[in-house]
Length: 316
Image (cartoon, rainbow, N blue to C red; front, side, top):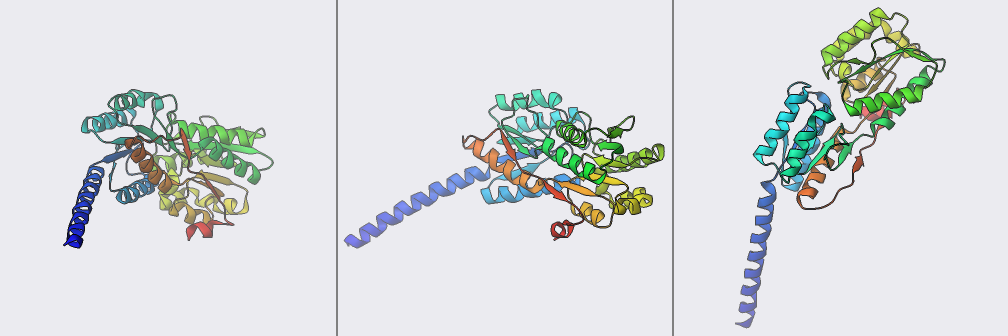
């Protein structure tokens, strides 16, 4: 009889513990953490979303990946304000323009919703943490690769996304610092494509037409290479020069389409970010903040430098 009483008590305790545990997990599963890219539909952000979604499943929370349909500052700010109204548990933003998003970030923080940035930072806002590439260092790596390929200097152009994006401007700054003197930037550069692949390709065609003696191009993001067929047509006449090192193309990002283009001789060097890691670490940080845990100001997700010598490793 005594043994039966002890067993019953233990069963009651176990049942109570399971109920508390289930309730805690149920509360967690009701938490939604939002990630807001510069715009939806960009291949680079697909890997960010995958990382966020898969990590959220492990944490028994929800990842809501939502954003503007074009690189529009006002539209992005409105998306954030709508998320505040919905009462999400945390927000990660890749700002198109740090100044235009500052008030929306402040509004979220005032409601007790933690806000971090990823991919593109807004250090002068009330954001808590930045998760992403050290863009100045990444740009520097790109500049070193460009200079190594053109040791005697030359004329170059830059294709970028939005002119107000801090992350892209840091990459350009690092790139220009690394190449140093001996290089001349063509008039009008950097040319903004507004994160649009088709526009980026058109810009390349225009630059090549207007500057027949161009030595190379730096892409601060991989937009033109996200449309591989159109990209190969645009650079078909320069493929042999790229392969021989007479014309240089250095681009950010290492999506599969870009790795294949590099292997085929349509790029010299790729500076790879780690978008999947941006997604996983962003939701980790937000979940920690929701649990009242502190986070560092900067979480550097690192970069990879890819050339024809190691491209097969990355393709695997």
